[in-house]
Image 1 (cartoon, rainbow, N blue to C red):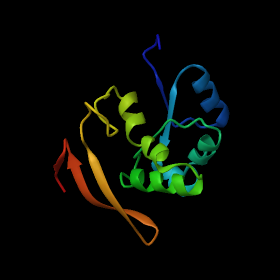
Image 2: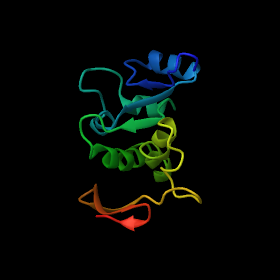
Image 3: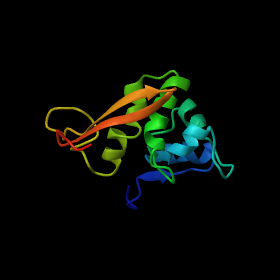
Image 4: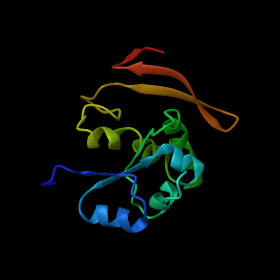
Length: 136
C-alpha cells in the first residue's frame, strides 16, 4: 500500500478484520489464539476469522510450538484440508514477509521440511530439513 503497510496484525474485532481485507491488507493472528479458541485478552478469536475467510496467516506470538499445533488443530476442527492450514504458517507468511523462495515444496524453492507424527492427538516434530539437508 502507499503507506507501506500491508499486514493487519491481530485485529481486535470482526469489523476491523473485514475493513483491513477491503483495503488489501493480509490479516495475521497468533497461533495460540487459534489453539485456545480465543484471545487471552478478550479480542476476536482466530477461529472466527477462519470461519469468515479473513485469516491469511498465523504468527507464533508467545508460544512458538503453537504454529505446528494450530495448523493441525485448524485442519481437524474447521474441516479444512491440511495443506491450507499449513499454508497459514508457511507459504502465506513467507510471501507476506517478502520471502518467495520458501514456505512450500515447489521447483526452484528452498527445500525446508518437517516430519511430524501425531501422538495422543497432538502433532510432534520428528525431523527437520533446511535447504534439503536434515538438521534435526
